[in-house]
Length: 156
Image: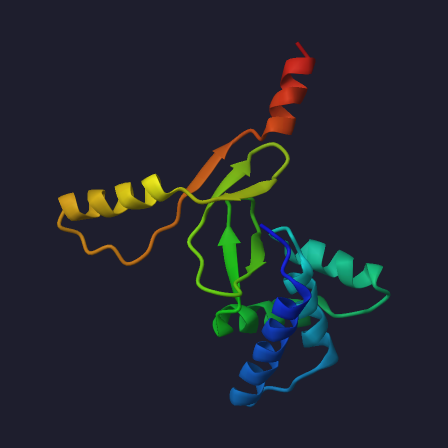
């Protein structure tokens, strides 16, 4: 996942504030901080990672506030939550509708995004063959990332 440009982050933050006002929810420093952390990240962050980055900035935000803010960010459509089967969710900013899939390392937990036009076409063809109306999909591939594979080779 590429890091968002500063202007994209600013636009997302302003869209989040606008969403909060539209929903008659308070715009607070803590909510802004959680949103900024997610919008600044190049990774798919967990709640623990978000809290760690908040503490690194010398700030304090309660765990319940982090969870509630993430729920609102997901409801707003500005952030997507993923469950990669690790026992917790990971979050990524969604500056625009985006179609991409994920490679998840079962050892280190790294997540790599990829796009593949052939895969996209194939999924639509499969749905058509089954007379199924395709609206959306999610592809997650589990295995070992290059770094973990290299560690296996070095231990032989």
